[in-house]
Length: 126
Image 1 (cartoon, helix red, strand yellow):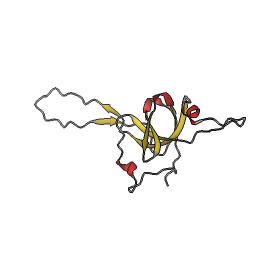
Image 2 (cartoon, rainbow, N blue to C red):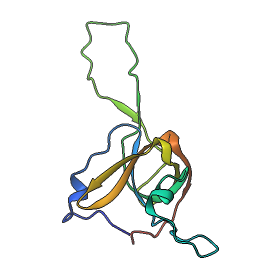
Image 3 (cartoon, rainbow, N blue to C red):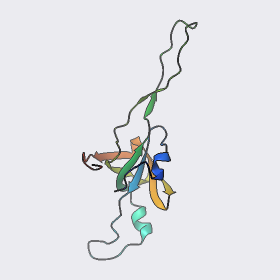
Image 4 (cartoon, rainbow, N blue to C red):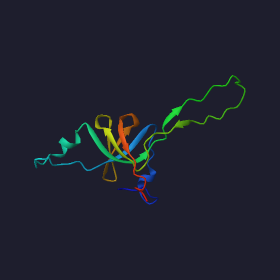
């Protein structure tokens, strides 16, 4: 598992909105009968799984409008956080994933709505 530390470059990445950065698990390249599949077959599977590396801030919540327009308001955006957390194992729909290569490592960026299920392992990074 790849951990985000201060000395690696993953810390510089900022995931925006309701997106999640996932490192795909190594797909099974062999069928139960022993045939080896080319990488193009396993990458096109409809459902994939991987490790959640970074999570965006979430869904923006609109700020309420005041009836007093002369009041100074601080325009701070508030977000409703996502269910996914760093270190989770995610099962997601491949058709909505965007492939990204960073430091010769393959990642996918997936919207929260494309994640079907999460498995949370509490002591993954400890």
